[in-house]
Image (cartoon, rainbow, N blue to C red):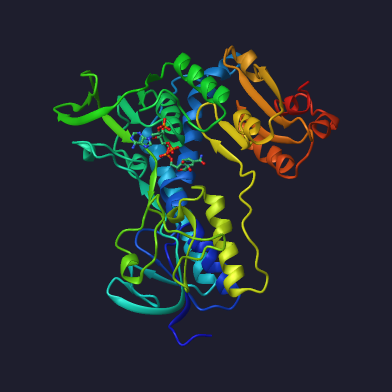
Length: 446
Ligand code: NDP
């Protein structure tokens, strides 16, 4: 035990910070966590969790239409945004309380307020000084706002959950995770959606065949895309916003949402004064054990901008706590991290794309299944699911699995176990199909 107030002071009570606090406390450390907004962090408060609930809520739009083909006639259906918004907010409140309980039950002291390093062992939180032997920075990231005049008129994923009313028109800038997810939500809820992006692709980095499938399905549903475009200025007009593009064209909208990536929260933490180094991306530079260049200061999660995913931050926080306060040090394995986009339809992916595998292995074999799910057929929906397996030809190992279609993320999590375990295509094929399911396609690709 050190002479400091705490053995560990964590800055940021998000996914990584809470896990690190709880595990370190479990190892007997005296722990405090500083939080300036709400315990739970981006994922719980204004990210994954409320977003997924909106995705569920919006999906009823199609489900209720399809229900007719299954014999269900629902008269007078209507959607009420305040009900969904407020129920989601209430669930966020519940989870926020659970996270707080977790901290309290593990004897972690919560310090509410902005934290700033005064020296390598002293942190100011809302005007009070606290000292700690070790400091973990888990301050997360925030939406990136572009440097265009009028950018402040746009909202981000921080505000989208609290819209006073559902707008008639939304323009979403960006075509990554957040843009495609919210495009799906808004469109299903009856909003006129336009997605604008600087490049000609959506979901860059994803298996192109799947991204293209999402684009085609989305266009068929009636979403608008303006790709290869540069937004130069946002003007406030009497009934909304006017967007001015580099090609001289304009577009009017009620709401503009920025979804152009997230930047690490490194400002106003006192990092310069203590000498904590940033990397070329402006994130806190850490080694594989989450150590910064300052001996007793560490960082995990989005503030390090390695992989901006909640489960990764959680593992990093856990690994940090076990290494620094436990007796069983281990490192996070960043191979084969599954990922999903909760668009409509959703995507799931693990391992390498076909192009990445060709670069890595030379010879690859690719298997695809392009099908209409049984439920969609009866519902009269034309959209097709697409599954793709990428196999290293030399070893027969499945090195990538990519899916778009109903419940793709749920199915993908199980496939990720097989890919992570290095199973071969022959072992996939040797597994008996589970009929009738969509996922049986995974063992039927010849
Ligand atoms: P993404 O990185 O997914 O997408 C960013 C989009 O903005 C891309 O279309 C990109 O264009 C465009 N873009 C990036 N920088 C600029 C710029 N300077 N000017 C104009 N356009 C730009 O970011 P998101 O904000 O959607 O999400 C941030 C991160 O949060 C994700 O990367 C992911 O790690 C995480 N997240 C995960 C989710 C999940 O797991 N389901 C859900 C939501 C977020 P292009 O690529 O075409 O060049």
